[in-house]
Image 1 (cartoon, rainbow, N blue to C red):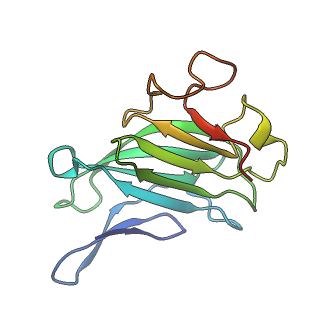
Image 2 (cartoon, rainbow, N blue to C red):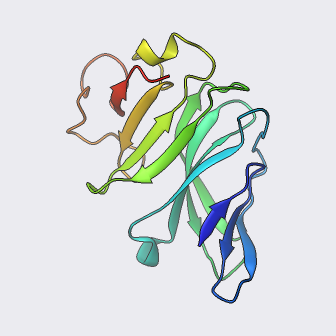
Length: 157
């Protein structure tokens, strides 16, 4: 079982009850509603060892893919997939989940700015649908239009 703590660690609970930290990002900023906010395990974890997290860093909220080695505590490599999400003490919410389509779905808070959800140039206040490498699926509804191709729905607060 993987789980997170708001100050930043991603931990693994082994079947014998041992809890091991496996990801310890140094830039997590747990202030107000911010911090480590969501985690998803790749559907192909057994073969690729990827987990995904959304958290508040020093300057923004971001979605990161970690390649972890659960047998070697603290051994991981990080790839930032989405960055530049506005952060605030409130409305930072960010959840990551894989859908039945195999895509990573990311919900983002408005970052404390009420105009972000309706602004297609902002990723805040949106549902993003991305491939596991952070790129936009070709069948997303706003591909090739104004704003970011990763936006699936917008106007969420």
